[in-house]
Amino acid sequence: MAVRIDGKALAAQVKARVRSEVGTLSRPPGLAVILVGDDPASAVYVRGKEADCAECGIRSFPHRLPADTPEETLLELVRQLNEDDAVDGILCQLPLPPHLDADLVIHTIRPDKDVDCFHPFNVGQMSIGRPAFLPCTPAGVMEMLRYYQIPTAGKRCVVLGRSNIVGKPMAMLLTQADGTVTLCHSRTPDMEALTREADILVSAVGRPGLVTAEMVKEGAAVIDVAMNRGPDGKLCGDVDFAAVEPKASYITPVPGGVGPMTRAMLMCNLLTAAKKHGA
Ligand code: NAP
Figure 1: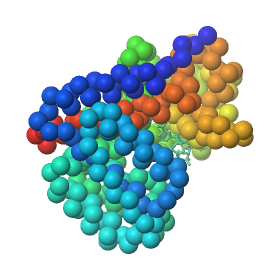
Figure 2: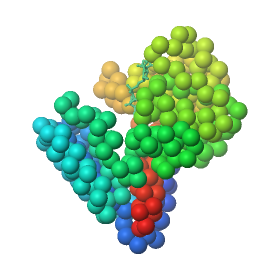
Figure 3: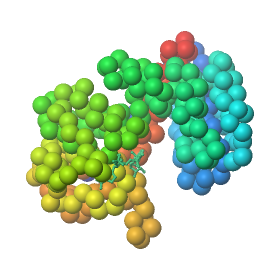
C-alpha cells in the first residue's frame, strides 16, 4: 500500500518557514493580485492566495477589474505595479476574458516580479538551470519528492501533459534532477507502455480516470497534478486513486496533494523576490 503524500501538511511547513523568514526582513513582501471579471473559480483561487499571504506575513494588494476592462487599462495597471516598490510580485489570475491577450499581460510583468514564472525570460533562465523563480506547481512537486526522499537521479520519469505551466516545466525540473524523462501528450501512441516503465509518474492532463492501475508499475511514485470535477461533482485527479494506491509506493491524493504545495511555492517565490528587492 502506498504512502499517501500529505501535501497539506508539507505546505503548512513550507509556509511556516516563509513566515519566520519574512519576520527577519526590513519590510514585508508584497503581492499584487489582479482579477479581471467574475469567474467564480478564479475568485476562489485568488481568495486562497490572499489568505496564504496573510498567513505568511505578506501584504496583498487586490485589484479587482470588471470583465469588460480594456486591454490598455490592464497593461497600464501592470506597468504601474512594475514601478511600485511595495510590490515584489505581480499575479494576474488566468484565464482572462477572451478580449484580453494573456501573453501580452505576462510579457508586460517585469521578470523580477513574475512570481508565477510565466515570463519567457524566467522560462529561459529555468531551462538553462539558472532560475530566478520556479513555476509553482512543478516546484511544489519537486519539493514533495525531496521531502519524502523519493530519488530522481537515474530514475525513469514519465510526465503526462505538456502545457507551458505544468507539463513542460515539470519535465525540465525532473531532467535537471537527473531523471530520465519522457513527456507524453494527446498525440503519444501506446502511452500505457511508457507509463508502465515509470518509477515516477506525474499526471497533468485533466481527465478523471485516465491513469488506471494497469498503467502503473509496481512500486512507482504517482503524483496527480490534475484537479477535475468527477461525475459526482467532487474534486478528483487523473488517477484512479483506489485502484492505484495498493500498487504504488507513494501517491498524492486530490484534494490535499499538489494543490496546497502550488500555493505554498508562490509564497516562497515572493520571499525570494522581496529579498532580491532589498527587503
Ligand atoms: P492543459 O493546458 O489543458 O494541458 C493538458 C495536457 O494534457 C495537454 O498537453 C494535452 O495534450 C494533454 N492531454 C490531453 N489528453 C491527453 C491524453 N488522453 N493523454 C495524454 N495527454 C493528454 O492543462 P494544464 O493547465 O497543464 O492542467 C492540467 C491539469 O492540472 C488540469 O486538471 C488542471 O486543473 C490541473 N492543475 C492543477 C494545479 C495544481 O496546483 N494542482 C495547477 C495547474 C493545473 P496536447 O498538448 O497534445 O493537447
